[in-house]
Image 1 (cartoon, rainbow, N blue to C red):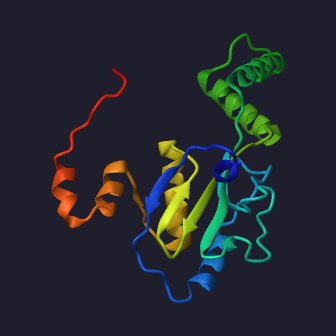
Image 2 (cartoon, helix red, strand yellow):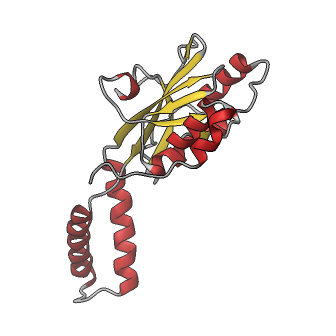
Length: 203
């Protein structure tokens, strides 16, 4: 389960912007505002994402303030996607085209007719598709400014950062080893750090 499992991969961030004075009340309100909402079966939506309980991905209600863990905020970032497999779409399109040609007494359908059939069939199958759910954990030391997110995927991280900005009005800086060392070393050793060169240990 992400960051609370036995092993995981994560991206580290640093948040430098000062917290609002009423951050607990404000953040609680915004987390509920941007909580995960399931995809409505009657829509053409293919994707939905938002915050869930880090201990239960099915809990997006946040009746209490379970996302506060002392001076930390811990939430899950859930993404649901639904799609129609291409081979399934081709099969149903072919079947529908044959039925349409038989009903119209045609041997061929125009490109526009086939396009309309494809869109109709896709929309119909999409409503029957079961969403695929993925969750990623976020743990934020709100006083210390350190934030961990359990993904290394760039597109997932970017989507997460967009929601983080909307929810908390924060734009974190991703931490790389050089930046971590830069923040940790005293001024007397900063020059030595700047002269460090990369080394390939796989040779």
